[in-house]
Amino acid sequence: MSSELGSPKSQAISLFVAGLLPVIAFTVIEEYYGTIAGLVAGMIFGVGEICWELYKHKKVQKITWIGNGMLLVLGGISLISSEGIWFKLQPALMEGLFALFCWGSLLFGKPLIVYLAEQQGQKFPTFLKDKMWGVTLRTGLFFAVHTALAVWAALSWSTTNWALLKGVGLTVSFIIYLGFEGILLRQTVMKEHKEELIRQHLEAAKQKLEQS
Image (cartoon, rainbow, N blue to C red; front, top):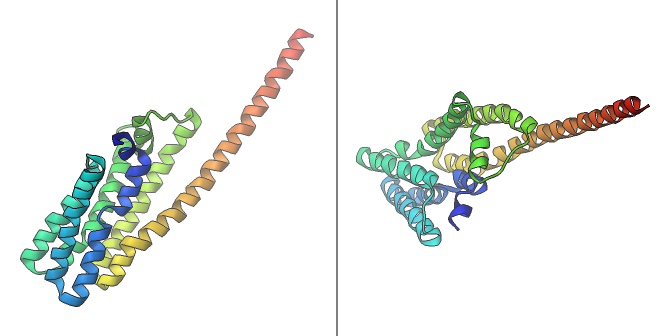
């Protein structure tokens, strides 16, 4: 169960799901009972997410600790200042950190996507591994753009629209982005397959000439 919890797929899902219930709780409660009540509800649900994951998997992912820990700290600052803005900045900080992780992994010579896959014993073909540099760079750019958008939403948008960006906007736009990357990778694989077939035909023709 712990290996499933730490899989790249599980970590990717957690990136979008972590902190979503606290956001929904904050948005609904704030609308009817005010900012303070919304913050308390959001923080309670943040603790609840950690406890539920611990109960279900006997372990809490790092991304859950980071996301909800950040949410609790910023929620506490918002309670002290009576301003919900700090709580609303949590999605922006999470997305900004992920963008930095993507770009930082390139500086260390191993794209984040390749690292996460290899942690699970998965291997990329050499030609595909080379392409992961571009994928990781563009993924970092995607999250950097969303970070700027999330900051703008926290500062200027209504709470409902801010929550929609976190819960729907990020997920839908990332699915579209993944579709774009999937098309590019498919073209790369097809091109490599064609080149391999050509090499095989040339090698076969060369062997026939040598035999004759």
